[in-house]
Image (tube, rainbow, N blue to C red; front, side, top):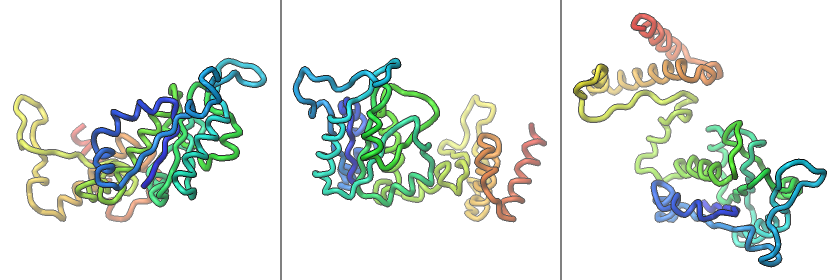
Length: 252
């Protein structure tokens, strides 16, 4: 996968891509990242990259021409057939189904806005999709671009040592939150809730799978009931869910 990032502050990404799965995917040649700074495409060092908004009102936006030149330069290097995404609070929110959809694209350009955004003509003529990470405002699109990049990279085959790990993550687990996870030691001293559930130590993989599904259903109900309302439960899932609720209310 090849992703080009258009940003006034590409330096923000330098530390980010040195660590974790991003760095691992680059070393494995599963991911190529290019950066394009619109400042490199202004007429001269005295020209401004931003300007006031026509019609008045507070704030400034990025000018169209440097952005357009950045887009063209990136597309030429990437040999076209590129999906262009603008990170914007006005875009549709990122979710799992959208991330899975993006995995089908080999080449993408992320545009990171600044200030109050970018010239609308760039969006109308070049942007394929506007994407948001939530209903709030940040100083720019760099952090959302990092989040989108991270969610995509986790799903590229070969990045994770065990791909099944990502398939049990929250949201990927049939739209449910992940079940509780534990590791060594079996007992943590001086804690009230200090032991690992015995079922996880039983070696009965069928029972463990059922327990994890039941926990996923229950935790989703407790923490994100909106997700559970969207899911059509199977007969087995209904039984597991009802048993979870009975246990929950009994021990509440």
